[in-house]
Image (cartoon, rainbow, N blue to C red):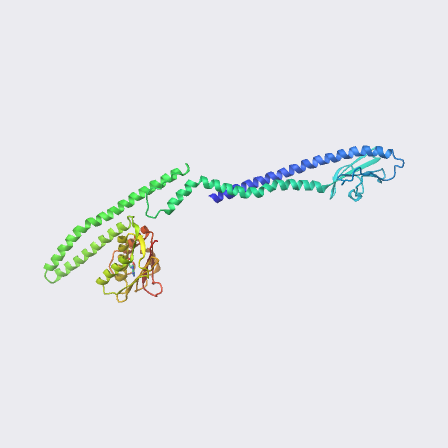
Length: 435
Ligand SMILES: Nc1ncnc2c1ncn2[C@@H]1O[C@H](COP(=O)(O)OP(=O)(O)O)[C@@H](O)[C@H]1O
Ligand SMILES: [Mg+2]
């Protein structure tokens, strides 16, 4: 907007100036020509009457006479008086005869170099022609045009700077508003304070705030519903599970035993799902950052140890040389995220090949496992809720959605790749923590 206004207004002013300059130059040229022509005529008429008297008073009136200069000076207007036969009788002192055409002519006319005026007297017996060089007229014209165009050289940069400054000043409120919108995180739905907004933009600011408020309420309602339902399910699920476990212990071997086992497995799956729903609600609730950054290495080490105790698949942890990697992401939330990534690697990866968990000093976390390649078109949608690729393992399809929501809320980036970088197979989830 600033650039468009600056360029547009400058271009407009320049064109207007050019137009005015051209018109002024034309008017000045016309007036100058008229004035100088009338001076020329006046001079010719005055000179002719003097010349006729002078020639009549001469003894030998057929001889050419050159008027002597009173003071040495450069002649601007030269004149030539001819007799009836066209022979020159009287000329000015500095004359160049080649300036005058062969045949005299009354009235005004122009040659390539001079402006001429001719007039006759005493019934065409005497004829005078006065010549003025055109060069001086041209010079006057170009000087006028030059003087009119000179201000343009200053006008263009000055107007650009002036307009830029003025527009910037007037748009200060809008620019502040833009910066406020830019710096806020994706999860920040609090109202934007646009105090210095121009009156025309204030309604837009209000509409944005209303929209944010509605969005915030809708999201909150959805989240609290998810969290509450998952929470409410927890106790009855745990109670039912306990009952079923008791039933299985008491039931005799046979079909009833098998059936209770299956019911128990389904109940476990259900409680895992409700656990995931609670995690998702937390991940999407915002406030995923803590005031003072904390070292993430102990969390990673602890998690890897935890998983290693529960699985046969070897977990390989590689830590950076630095003693600590600081991040302001909430440690609990980071643990949920990593848990989901490592759980996926163990669950969907090839069981007899190790899972690598790798932390780099610059805050890059990678979880890599072996296994069949996941097609690219699947990779892009896996971070949506309830989306799963072709895998024999059981699951809800919420793990990567939780990880993605946490990454977005904490200002981190989660990238999925398959095959894993530097390999021909496998899966890699990498998380770049914000500094
Ligand atoms: N480490 C991994 N290796 C191979 N495939 C994976 C891996 N992690 C996730 N996936 C694929 O992405 C899908 C979605 O993962 P997720 O959201 O955690 O759901 P779930 O694990 O419950 O299936 C999985 O079903 C699986 O197909
Ligand atoms: Mg999962």
